[in-house]
Image (cartoon, rainbow, N blue to C red; front, top):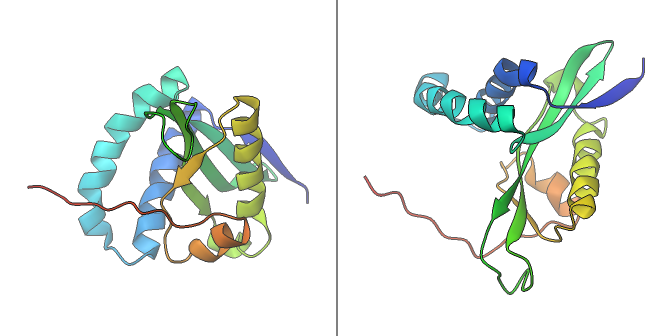
Length: 153
């Protein structure tokens, strides 16, 4: 059966939210601990999916979504890694259904994201990787950054 790609659509809202929670659950977090994030993500995603600032692709087999990727172009001050551009591509919510992993689907999604960034003339992209995803991204040429973080409460 052929696997086809299509743009993310508003009717994918619940599936995007589910993929995101499952992605984080598979990286070791409990579903219970993730519920507040998922609720806040639902509110965050709705307007961005509606206005197109969150976009991406779904891969389908026989009309069933088996993988997805989200993308945004974010405003960021010019930086040594992109000195003449105030934008970065941000890739998020990369998820492949477990029974379809190891078939190159995430790689295919990443190629779609790269092609779109190139169309938009955005030459620098970032993502935050789970441990499981890191080997794929490294094979595709992605490398670590010097980013640090703190959470104030």
